[in-house]
Image (cartoon, rainbow over all chains, first blue to last red; front, top):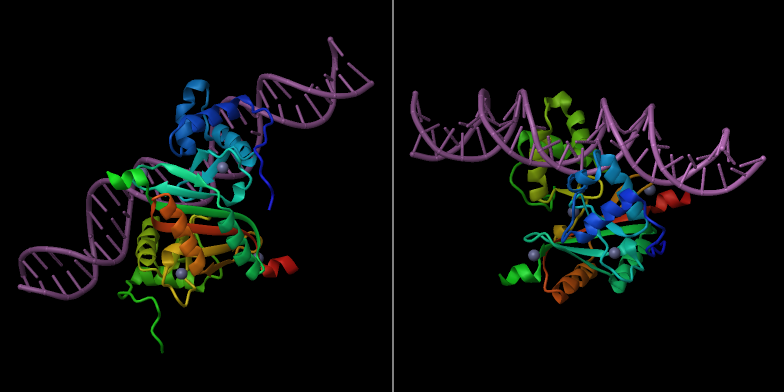
Length: 136
Length: 136
DNA sequence: ATTGTAATGTTATGTTATTACATTGTTGTG
DNA sequence: CACAACAATGTAATAACATAACATTACAAT
Ligand SMILES: [Zn+2]
Ligand SMILES: [Zn+2]
Ligand SMILES: [Zn+2]
Ligand SMILES: [Zn+2]
């Protein structure tokens, strides 16, 4: 499994705009929501967003949430294993938290090995109700 | 004949057609692929497929793969925990296998509890290369 | 037969993502 | 500088996935 350290090559203008939009959001954003937010900055077409996202995903600064068709800025300081992150998605408030769990990673790796499956990436997205929303 | 493990009400005509399409496929199918396969049976609109899929998902006969926007018939003998199934998706041949792992389920539940997150469903989709494709 | 409800049919539209091609900007080389 | 090579961006069109809104049909209970 490839180690994904946050590559810090200099971002281009569009990549920076998209990254900032995600970093300032308090939840996941869809590509089209980002597009709308950046129309004032000259964005006019989905591809401008998707191209920037591709790069940000590659460099590990952003994650894609498959079950939401949306994107979040990585909140991890030490993103050693970006391909195995666990996301907990609150279905009430929409907030997402990101957890790295070494034991879980190892467990999945063991399961894959037992089936002779070469694991390259794990999508793990938990749905439910977050602590804040439970107590309301 | 032993009863199918998935206890359910009798399926309607459209539900049966969609179920059969998935059961006979050797990999996941998108809703639109199913639609095309069933045009000969009178299907003309996506909604006919999506409505049938909703029911089949509800009754546990079918799973949705979030990272593929596609659907598979459940291949489990023991479908006790449909909301926590692990899928291994081969990126070479497209085949999908389904695994129930009690220890993994418990591990995820523990992680969620530790964050006081009420877990209702876990999407777990592993990507990689299956045994058959590795040896080629 | 009447009525209520589930299932289905139909049209239109909304949302997410990619293909193809044109233009501009930047960098390195002779 | 000139100019080739490549990276980044712009633009238009379309593909792929999903739902909303409303009309009709099938069928069982009274
Ligand atoms: Zn991260
Ligand atoms: Zn919440
Ligand atoms: Zn199953
Ligand atoms: Zn394979």
